[in-house]
Image (cartoon, helix red, strand yellow):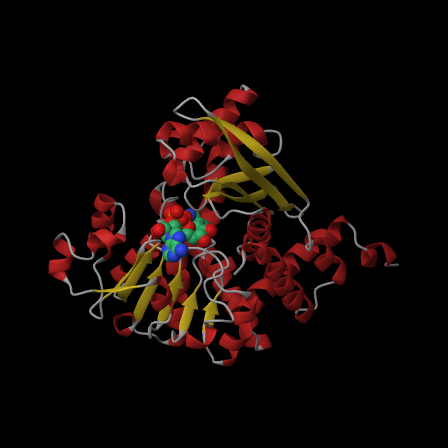
Length: 429
Ligand code: NAD
């Protein structure tokens, strides 16, 4: 998808599903544009002494239900429209899982792989200096996203607290555990997706040992979901990263792949070197080929817009579990639904990350950390409850799983907006 179209596409989908679900037009109108967006040019002192400027954004999309919540992305392809689309999806997602949050998102146009560690720290601190009056534990709470991680969240939390001259760990989530992060946050997105896929497999009577899976994107989200699925007996036959993918009909041992990738920094390193190649036959494939594999479950876990009107007819998977945000262009929704391909939508499937971010924020406010078992148990409860509500709506109304998720979510947001006052509310007797 062209980067500039992603927000328009997200709005088209919102309006279509909102109208079908009978959401008040005034509420849909309220969600057509972000409440506020802040942009800034971040000055960063580079190691060679130059000052380089990086364009940065933070979008507070909607906060009817609670403070905005959403990650910060570092990527050369970041655009304002992409940040706004991601912030809209966060608004819907937080409501899907019933969190007391609205939605937000941030991004910086940067290729972080080209920065030294110290440049990355200066960039991250500069981001927080620029945004410190726009975020806060009761206003908008950032978190990690693509190419940002716990260390970066730690630098940002530290910078915010230096500016405010007070401890405020609840300003950001996904921090290192030593700085107030939650146990289980690193695996949360993958684990939440795993819970959803398991709940779905149970409804469908799928036997994990006879179910094949392909995962696009072997980062935080993709690795953990692949690892947990393999642990439950699923056969993960393909994985990929930005450099390409690998396929094996016998399935991969995910932890061996992960450790080899950690050593070589890319999946390419496992093509023909190291223990994994001796353990299992594999074939090199492209990211496009991975998407078109004949597998039971396809898990896009990298970037948005990878399944479009152009390749949708070549998709052979029976189920798509959207672990990335927005991997399907809205034009692909109809053709997949007509072919009976179930899409477990991003706003449900990857909501485990924000759910454990919420747990982290609660722990920070209570000053009382939870055990890993508590985090995992509560995460499973939240994800199963959301899945059950969406599945019930889908069965009752005969709509797609995405339409059901949007309907459940939008009704909650609509109720909050109505309580703040709509035309209907003021005209009532
Ligand atoms: P990450 O930076 O840890 O990993 C991204 C992965 O995608 C890497 O393996 C990278 O090599 C791969 N990749 C990048 N470009 C690619 C391309 N063109 N083709 C194939 N692979 C490519 O990021 P992440 O946190 O795992 O996020 C991945 C997706 O999951 C994003 O859409 C993100 O918004 C979504 N998500 C993440 C979280 C979270 O908590 N981390 C939560 C919800 C949603």
